[in-house]
Length: 402
Image (cartoon, rainbow, N blue to C red):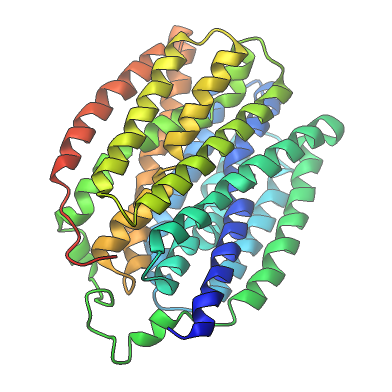
């Protein structure tokens, strides 16, 4: 890699931070805020509103393997621009909804495609192809973008919802997102990652550049053991993060205070991502995984006891610390074992893991509608976390250094 590339790759990291801040900040972190007016306007149950984020995550999981494979073959610039286009169209269309099922439809189709093309999958694929050394740190910094968006957009949207309502808020978000992402993408992604160029040169055939077939990926424990073990952590995060708005109502706080909870979770996730990303270059990946799960278990235990907004803030911080480790952990674990040449394809399958997280908010909402409490959900998550932590003892070590 040339001296110029050594510097430019950090520009790519900052760019990947921005596109995640926009895509995840708007669609994931702001969901807890939009869910409150949707509950009121459509007279919907908590379970029904949580179906919205679940079909979104399921749609993203289904599309990610196809998009990930395409990212190993085609120009990333046009793929990300496509994502920005679909995000703009999706947000604009949602504001015309007159029934909740119409929002489900957009969240199940247009918006998952947008996130698959310009979200975490795109960002981590870019990092894997630009970095061999310091990849864990780069992925940790890049993944902070979701939390930068999780701080900026919820605070912005909370005020807009009060002043202009949820429909007009979506229109302004649609226009603003495209104006930020499109020009930046056109400029930054004009340069091709040097690691892609090596695929046809002397570097081809090394462990880092090996191309894995779909069959090879889906028939090895290198994939399935971490994939399944990460599911409980993803579910715990989903059950807590997407219900922050209703948790705030349950302890007597105002709807606007949900933005504070989202910001606190985002700050915790920044800390978790920096730790897991930087330590991913230094520590056994199993230790990082076990620590993240232990912190999530603390968050779940605190949620079983929460009665005040202050207690909810503390539990939210722990949830953020644990949840922040998910994306960089996925990046370092799978890139260290599969290399860069097939990283898009591998991560496309890894993103199916979000479908586990997609179930958790709906289950949590359904449990609350039936029992009047989330306790059964929290206990269930604690129980399934333990065998997953035990199973990770058998995680195979990378054949080569990441």
